[in-house]
Amino acid sequence: MKAMMLVCPDGYIWNAECCFFANGDNNDAKIFEALLSKDKEESLKSCLKSGDAMLLDRGFRDVLPKIESLGVQTFMPQFMSKDQKQLSTEQAKISRKVTMGRFVVETVNGRLKNVFRCYKL
Image (cartoon, rainbow, N blue to C red; front, side, top):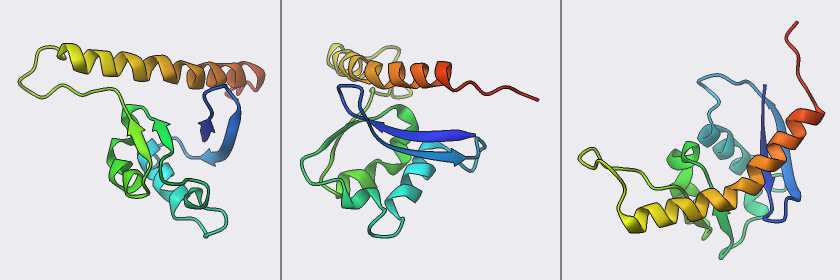
């Protein structure tokens, strides 16, 4: 099972949607797209406004155009093109900044996983 959480920069969990199957049909982008297309009052669209910013990992790359069409600014670690052997200095700086910001999210995830352990039967 997989959960999708929106975490504020101070570690406050803003929204948590739970119980998605952890399979190829439910990657991060598809889950987020489903959350955007829910009923109007339950949708994330009703909470997001133009000018908001989101730090995302690379799993959200397929849904970036939809998020940005809402006026939300997105930040994601940079990708290397096929002919690159390493990121440029500027690309590396951007990736490091996003990774440092996402540290809060990963800390919250780790804390929750330690408190609510799942065991295989």
